[in-house]
Image (cartoon, rainbow, N blue to C red; front, side, top):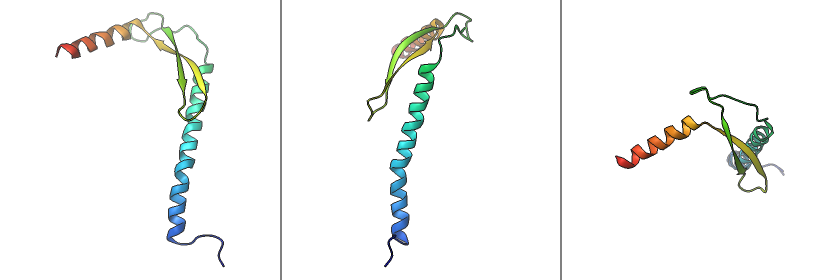
Length: 94
């Protein structure tokens, strides 16, 4: 009597069992990234394009399927906002 599946059954079982494992690993990696970004200090930084001081927008991220949330300050520069607005308006007129 064999306690372990053999042949094709083993291949199929291993393929299916890795999917939840991969999702779990991905969730852990995303969680680690969000924790790292949330812990970063708000050191004064200058925009590499225009040289003005970058502003930060408070943003809340959550990971679907968990109760975890992270408050992250997303860096934004006025030159990027202006450029996005111009592109958005140009798209509407075309």
